[in-house]
Image (cartoon, rainbow, N blue to C red):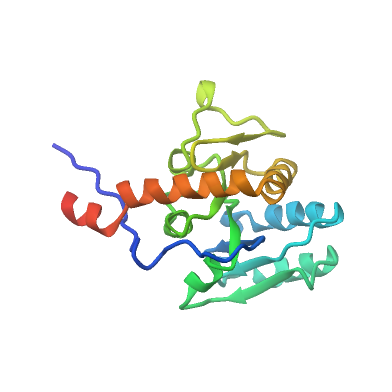
Length: 203
């Protein structure tokens, strides 16, 4: 007899910010598995179209020097902040409208749960538990390249797909109401299903 008890999130600490912001953030290990090169190239496409936003990369890892070099190559030094490891990731969530998890492989990301608890509009790749968390229901359970899919609580794209990721970013930056709606649903879902209280009661 098995019981599945997922990670819990402190939904009293991770709460939405009241301030209107347009920034994008990533929180996690800066490793190849996380697909951050695709995020940087997608963000570059957005900037070339004239969008004004900042990207915060919060975390450390072996890929950081390579990604900083890619950022310089794409002439985005002033728009991308490599914040390094932080004990206060909440402050970065509260400065953002959008959280992106561009992983090439993933289990169940604690950072994604935290971002959803903060009411951020999230973009994830079709890997691990991410598509389930954002409520993406696709026929045939496949995510085609070159497209994005708006789920109940976020947007999902194929991994290795910077074009679709750029399209998803564009949608959320251009449509504040959609971003707000997805973030609100995400917060409600985490509060109901992934709060510390829910986890403790399950145990």
